[in-house]
Length: 268
Image (cartoon, rainbow, N blue to C red; front, side):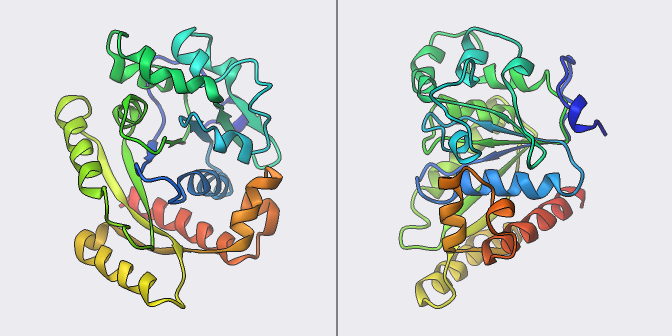
């Protein structure tokens, strides 16, 4: 396994053990929170971890403490101007992970990709040059070309679903998109599982949603439940992971458990 300092290479084959697209076309389900904090806890296991901010809102970038408006180069530039990804990737030194950042320029990618040859595979070409144990892609809340690029590059998909009314809405469309990508672009794409976020065990609604997801997804549903937690919600405003903000909070304990469960699933 490479050390953090040597984790960025220009090798021609994708040596990442796992490229995980964190995807749900609904907004507000905890994709960014999951990408940031899952990555942070995976680094605690000694893994080299890259987070790719593939959402034009760039919340992962700002949530890790970077000023998205002052970056010299972002994922957009890597996709279209083709500088080396290694010159764009930022090391978040205090937590030991890496970030391929984004800003609002990425909003134009959907239009520009339309006329690009092999348009669905542009992100894969970028990630194929990099060597990390884990690459986590924070996808936009849509099923457009950026999300299709993420699915084409990924080995696995992690689907966060909030424990709220309409939780199941849109999941059938998401699963159909995953199947289409499998058939046309990435036959080995695996649904790693569904993780429940914003869970409140005091409400019957959260419990009802959990029961419904268990019925639909069976063992694809992660046992770990990510709670509705104030400390999780406020950490991004400080540009911190939950480990830095409050490592003893319920949210921190939940993401630590999720990282362990994710590794068990990938090793089984």
